[in-house]
Amino acid sequence: MTRGGEPATGRIAGTVVGPDARPVGEARVLVADGPTHHDIAALTDAMGTYRLDDLLSGVYTILVNVGDRPPLTRTVQVEAGRTA
Image 1 (cartoon, rainbow, N blue to C red):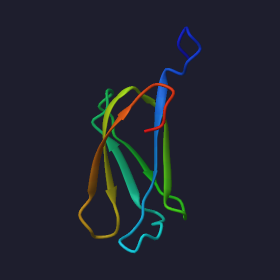
Image 2: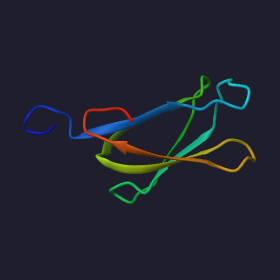
Image 3: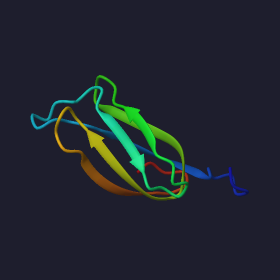
């Protein structure tokens, strides 16, 4: 927590869906290039959702791997106390 009572970290959350708009379970989600320069990985649940908490504020690159398809990439801005 910061002195003002606001959280010092934020989170990244989302849902991975396939070309048919159905959720993709067990997709690998990699969050890279953040302020700590440490990669963080997660798997989606059966509903295709993922959530990575306690991330420092900054710009992150998300890479999503589904099967043998090329990874999908997205850049997001994490802000303290918010979900990107």
